[in-house]
Length: 74
Image (cartoon, rainbow, N blue to C red; front, side, top):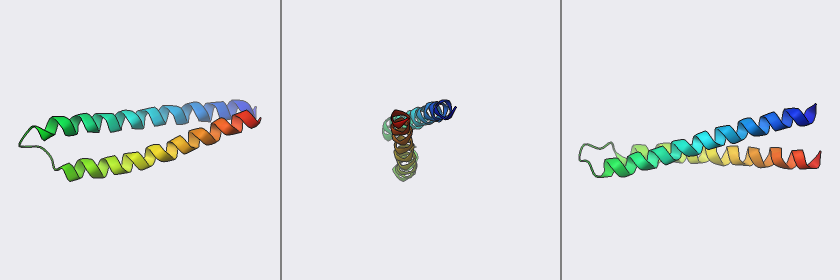
């Protein structure tokens, strides 16, 4: 029973991590696209959002590693 719960948590954590990575990639695309326009939002806004998303992705990656190691031990 515990193993099933860990598998579910692992799958959810991987899904959230992939979503966060997709958001980071989208921001990078938008930053590139807007850098060519004159009416672009400030690059500071992109940088702040990227900083937060990178921290979130880092925490999610650690969580995924934790769940994977816990599954191996059981």
